[in-house]
Length: 111
Image (cartoon, rainbow, N blue to C red; front, side, top):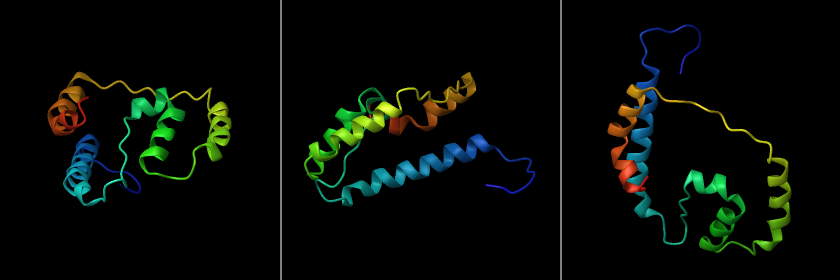
């Protein structure tokens, strides 16, 4: 959001506000997406079972036969087996802010 030095900017507030605006708009407008053109996946489900998640996407969106790309996806996933995601621990204050400000989204997706 800035080139060069900056001060007196609350980066966490910018992140929380931006995410909130995006999710509010998404939830308000997703009803305009025609039935069968939207699939929502939990990030944790995608991490735990990426191949099954993609099969679900293909089936839900009625895309071409998944078997056509299944081997390529398996090969790609095999190359990603050593991937280690970034670990970031929120402070107690940050957890409180997330719990309060993101409550509508937490409830919507039943986290």
